[in-house]
Length: 495
Image (cartoon, rainbow, N blue to C red):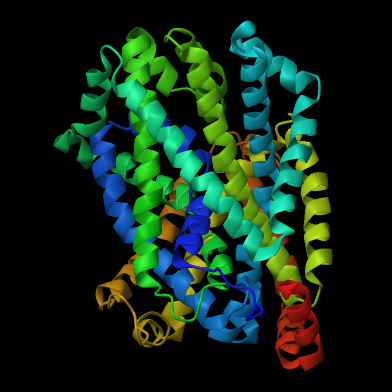
């Protein structure tokens, strides 16, 4: 269990840390591309709907579960459902950790392009040539290690370190994105980008793919259902409210996405309107590391703005990576490992298992696909936990506590039922989209986008976790029941 002496010092610090967890590269590089590729204003309508129908309900759940159980994902599920379900909590923790293994690679990319902007290497060469050279020379491996070390540096200082970093990084990130957004809207022709982003075509909302993409974006960029909020909620003060915090994080996260959309789309429509469809249709990497530098080249003071853009990406990736490292470390602590050793183990694993993704062997794309779908199952497990416990009983016990700022009504009970359905539908839809008439192509293990790679890796992980279930449950329970172990852990965490 978490030490009572290690808590966020204030609501402000806790909210900034939570917002840092939620706001990542997906807000800045994925949202503009997905919004533009799915009708702009029409997409925004569906996106806001799923903020309320997916993100906020799950955020409320994770806040309540983390604060109520004071345990990581495995312990939280054992306390909520019983020892037979330890493997579900382990699944949630594993998926977030698997994402950490390649997310550090992404942060490394942002670091290299920020440094390259400062030195004039970008756009001193064509962005695509710089990108290719960076990967072919093994540069991504070096920056991956640097990114992991930066994340470990923050986490090694405990909750106070996480809070201190968030108090600097998140306000700085907000200022950077706002400066870029304001500059973008003042460019000639930027109004076309604003009109595209904020003018919905109501008839287009009959297209189910817009709704699927909006739900996916919420699932991938708010951190809801990842187990990250649950982990940070362990360190909430006893008098902190859960529901209000969930709304603040959900709307704060999506506001950052919206600012990023304004920044990118206004710039595209102003500088290169003839290539708008090609730019927004690029992959995340293509949009961010190849097209964005080309856009900034054509703007007065573009090198400075480009530097601010990549610095914002570094900050966004850094705070999210910190949350993933803390989640994985918390699991090991709950299983009896001292905090310092847990962080060291997570750091070594992160560096080693991130190497295949850093080497540009196609593993990055595969892992991003597999565990992106895995997040849908994580969201389902959270919904399943409270539904099986008794959703109304759970709400009254863990959410509507004495002193709560706002009271959550029965709408949340139905929202959790809807989340369970959404998770299943979304996972099945993505698998259906990845189907192929070529059976051999469908059932390869490490192809970037097929059904077989997801199912094979899912089965392997689930079998291992089910076999380890009894050990996981007994170990976390023994940790709670051991006064000596708890005292040692408390002493170390408080140091």
